Length: 187
Image (tube, rainbow, N blue to C red; front, side, top):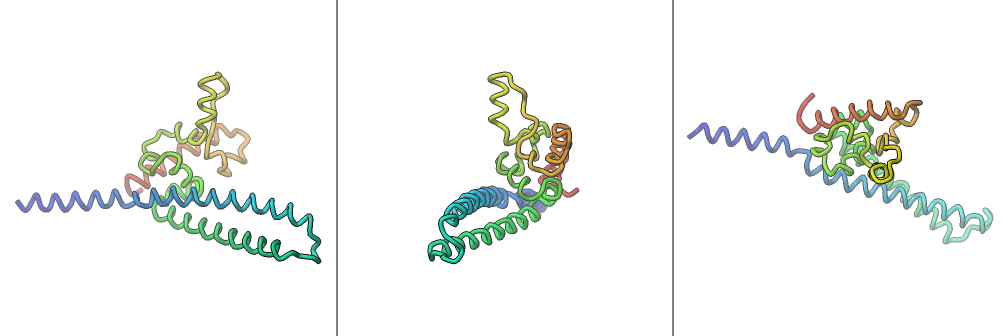
C-alpha cells in the first residue's frame, strides 16, 4: 500500500496549495470594508472640522479643536497604514488581479463576489456589473437602460475613456482572466 500513502500525500499537498489564499480572502474582505469605513469617517470628520473652524479665528484656537485636528490626522495615518496592509495582502494572494485592477478595486470585487474562487468562476459580463445590483434590478423592473459597469467604473481606464462601456468590457475580461490565474494556478 505505499502507492496509497504517496497518493494521499500528493492530494494533501495539492489541497493545501489550492487553499493557500482562502484565509486571506476573508481577511481581504474585512480589511477593505474597514478601509471603506475609515475613509467615510475621515471624510465626515474633515467636513465637521471645516465647519467648526469657521467659528474660531486662527489666533484663538480652542483646545477641543486642536485635539480634533490631532485625532483626525492620526485617523488619516491609520487609513494609510490600512491601505498599505491591503496592498501587501493583495500582492501576496492575488498578484495578477492587483496588477490589472489595483488593490482596492480588486479587493472590492472579491468582497462583492464573496471570495476569490467565486470571482474566478464568474464570467466577465458579471464581473463588469458587479456592484451595480440596484441598477440591474431597476433595469429588470422598469425597463430602464441596463448598467454598463459597477465597481470597475472607478478604474482609471474606464473613468478616462470616452467609451466607458467598451472600456468596462475590456477591463472586466482582463480582470476575469487575472482572477482565474490567481486562483487556479501559475501563469
